Length: 386
Image (cartoon, rainbow, N blue to C red; front, top):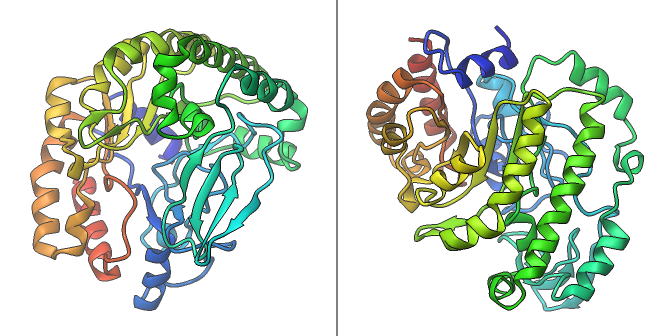
């Protein structure tokens, strides 16, 4: 059974089939450290990356935002083939050119692909901080829409589109449409910046509706073109809209500014035969899950334990909701005994219930020894193969 077939069985709660053997991702520094500790460097991580740059594994819909993909951990630990996302530009086109605005010594102020202004370390040792978005009012929005948010379907395709279509049509892995940065909060967060986006909900709610309505139409029209050429197994959305305290916006804001547009786009995707709709949001998603379910979302990851997420309680409360992730990454840096405890406490219950793909609750940090990570994946395989 290949990964695509297995994905369908898992999403359909078939507990007689082994679930997928996947991981979420790693920091670049983590993988570089593992090479020194015994990970065989066959492929390496192509490109010029810094310590705080993420590396995608199997459990996220890759490619996305230029993030590199791991192949060495996957091959050495014999993990299953993971998600891929239809590789076509779905947001700002053409993207903004990166430009250095100010040199601050060990930091620089630069513009990003969404026109956002960021401060980042020159060595990429920390995540860049957005200090200003490209949109602040209706005039900015109209300019952005006219210049960089038109369909332009053929121009949004990569140069190797025909080659990709052949790969997609003969695939043995689950293929996703949508994904980072598509979301009715997530993308706006890039475009407005923080904390500006939170003020806009109250100062100019009509602009939020204008933007989400336009994005909804843009994506439906774009996806119509894509799905006329290739089918997809699922759809991903990216929100990153929760922290330890829960949702970053109120339930009322969600229902007014997100629910109508999610219902429209999911309704369209269902009409195209897609059944699985998965959201990526960090932090504690407890408040958000019922709101997403009302919209038609039926899966979520990565369920960050340190933020209070609890996959066992979530499964008990939502028996038909798909759960991906939810294992506490912190135990990997502690001891093999703590790894045993984490897996023994969660996997028997979750695997018995089904609709679950286990992996760490976010990116594996560089304080995790390769020996501990191997031990964790080996124990995981024993559970999965039971």
